[in-house]
Image (cartoon, rainbow, N blue to C red):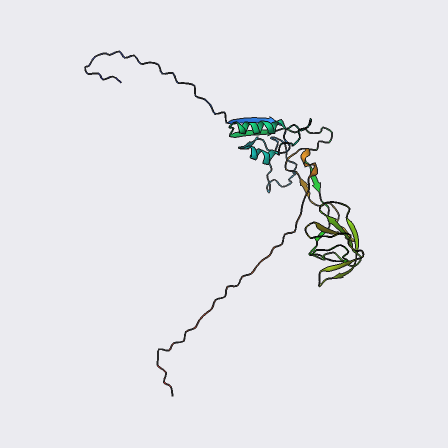
Length: 262
């Protein structure tokens, strides 16, 4: 700014300062496409709640925000190893290219195809009632005595079914005798293979099975990816350990008055 040394009228030309157009961030983008799994904006949840005061489950009306390709894979599934005509997953390739080129934030809106005939979009598993037991120890091939974690609902002539987690046909057996003290049962036929507690479970036929079905499990997101939905139920052992705090009390007996001894 010039310095004026005397009073008067001065004319000063000030050049126009045009502000340059500021660039906007291109690190945030939105994507719409088909993914293997994941939430669908605006798609109603399959859960029917009769008491809204206890649990409130609104529709998912907003696209999901992901901040990395690993975040996208965890939510929407990985890219197919071999793209097919029906599963090219262009959305996943676009997301990977976006983050590889410096992208930071992306809002993803997944779309799904709903079968007009069945209308089924969520996969579900309906469980039945029954008793499922586990082996408490290894049962080798040829064994006729099984040690179980529980003998509930088991008695002489009970029907046992030995299942393997890897699949296959269950082995049907009949209980000959029960040793409640040892927690073992004697079966009518020897085992044809080794059965370990980690990969074997036992079901029992009840004389009077309860009516109705068990709980129903739904997939978290719609799509054909959940056609192979599996439910693994394990027992929970509440091991409570009681601790006692011992306190040693030492009593000191001191007499202020001398005691005469004889």
